[in-house]
Length: 254
Image 1 (tube, rainbow, N blue to C red):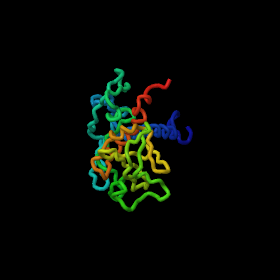
Image 2: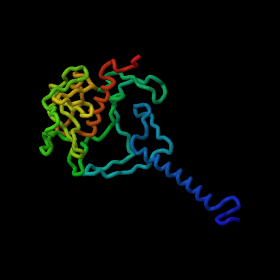
Image 3: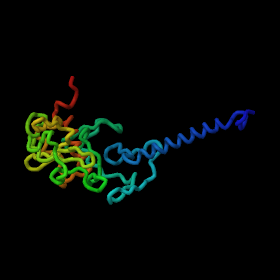
Image 4: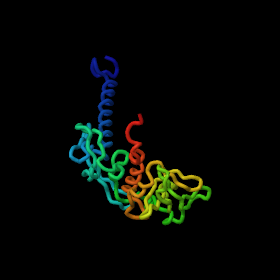
């Protein structure tokens, strides 16, 4: 019998290999379960009646302490209440495409869908709201070499004016402008800078929505701060416009 052999058919190296395989299996299983702390169990019918936990089941609940006195959060926890699904399924099987029954941009369907997030603003490491308008923080301003869109028109994808820029919102943690605040007549709404193009003269153009749709952009509860939930809703509205803003954008081209 050779050195290291336990029996005529098994040795230490073989046992080590088996132990590695078994350990690796449990590691993959553990990581797979931990990856389901958020977003699971899956809501298969969109109505909160049919859930799927996936392979390996759900991880045990764990409570995390949030920074800056924001309390704690337990995940996975009780399923959060969703919003009304104003659409009908086009098939009988789980995951079938859905067809909007109203205005999908307002109802939050398809590319206009938004996730359920906390109704609290994102904070910096020192506990201040991360995204704020220039009017509440005099330490920041627009670079003199950059165009200033304040007071300039905002043009929708139909070539018409949808509003006028009245302020800019910047990110304190990653200093750059996140939103333009647009006056649409009766109120103001936010426009993500990633969905806009600013010309040299400051004019802002938006390709995702029409001029009349700016008034439908989700409004803020506090005019000087935006919550994580509101960020998701605002961005989703403009994202949904890339498909739903005009009938010509839906369906095949040929």
